[in-house]
Amino acid sequence: MKTCTKCKTEKPIEDFTRDKSRRDGRFPQCKVCKAGVDQKQYAKNASKRKALSKIHYDNNKDAHACRTLQRKYGISLEEYEELHKKQDGQCRICDTTAEENGRRLAVDHNHKTGEVRGLLCDQCNVGLGKFKDSPTRLRAALNYLEETSYYG
Image (cartoon, rainbow, N blue to C red; front, side, top):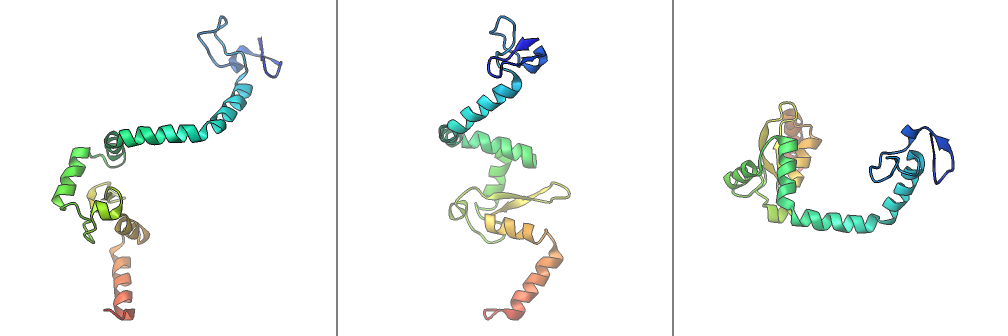
């Protein structure tokens, strides 16, 4: 048993986090009290943490992109760059470039098989998602636009 220095309650030793720097090997505050203190500290330093995180991200964009590509799509940054070069740096649907898009082109993939299909600008990628990657829905939308458009 141990007494928490914050709430002054005697609790089982398992209710205290491990701390090798302490003689008894446990933190002086119980897990509940420590969580409350940690939460306040976290909120107090949120803007500083956010700024440091942005600096770290800005200095490591390629490493971040590499991990994300591997985790989400199973491709390396080199494979992404090959696709980018193969598509002349343009969206596979509308020819928008990464610069016009304001960020890297998105990796489009088949949601059922996970197979990468190509790189798309944000607008085209979201558009396909909204149509649930359904050729039938896309054809119906195309027919609708052709029937109702003044520019057809």
